[in-house]
Length: 151
Image (cartoon, rainbow, N blue to C red):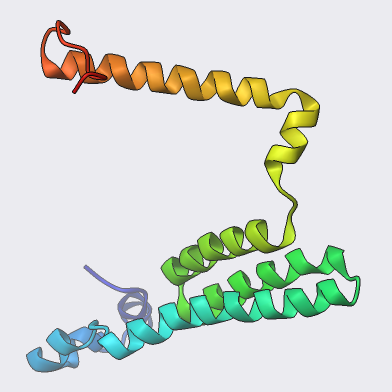
């Protein structure tokens, strides 16, 4: 298998170019891709720290009547985490950022649902999920003669 550098060298009529992995010693190959625990703690600490900083700045922005810019702070926190720490810490920052933003900076959802009539829909969905769960439990217990509620 030839790399692009090897093909270029072959085309130019020169000798074969060694890749970086062919010139390394076996000990250097084995030690190269490992992540230390300190690096992992730094990456996920950056994720949580950026969300904490976005929350603190969000409180300041909210106090100064800049309600529209609070969401931008959380987007910036996820973007910086993605840039400096990688994909999975950015996913963690996104999850905790979404929880923090919804908890601290949005109004209660149940208040809007009661006035919009959506509370009845929410109760019906919850009841249907519970009924489905009971049917699955009865089928898994083997027959359904005994009630899972009585247990």
